[in-house]
Length: 201
Image (cartoon, rainbow, N blue to C red; front, side):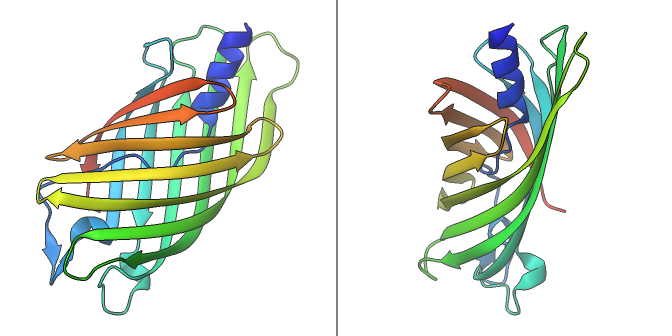
C-alpha cells in the first residue's frame, strides 16, 4: 500500500519540463517551439505499468511583442493517474508563469524560470477522506535544438505542499514530434517516464 500511495503522489506531482521536438516550423527567425509547446501522452512510474495520462502546455507567443523568443511565458500541466492500481487514483494540475530568454539569437537555445500554483488529489478506495492540497512549485530549465528535427530540454524543479515536498530533475528528447522524458524524484528515489506527442496550438 505504501508503494501505491507513493506512486499515486508521484503521478499527481506537477511537472513541467519534458522534452519536445519536431521538424521545427519557424515564425520569422524564431523556431515555433520557442513560442508554444503542447505535449500529450502517457507516463509510467517505477512499476513499468501505464500509470496515467498527461497534457502539458507552454506558451510565450501571446506575451512577446516581436516573437523573438524573449518574454513572459505561461505554463500548465494536467494529469490523471492511478491506472495501474485498483485502489488509488490521482489528479494533478498546475498553472503558472515565468520568463524565458534567448541565449544566442544565432542559435536555437533558450533558458527560462517559472513559478506556479498547483493542486493535487489522491483518492484511496475505502478511505473516509481523500488526500488533497494546494501548493507551490518553482522550476528553471533550458531548451536547445542541435538539429532542426531534434529538441532537448532539462528542467530542475521543486514542489512543496502537504503531499509532495521534494526536488526533481527532468531530462529528455523529442524527434519528429515524438517525445521521451525521464524524471528523477530525489527524496522518493523514484523515476517516472513520459511518452508523448507534440502539437502546436
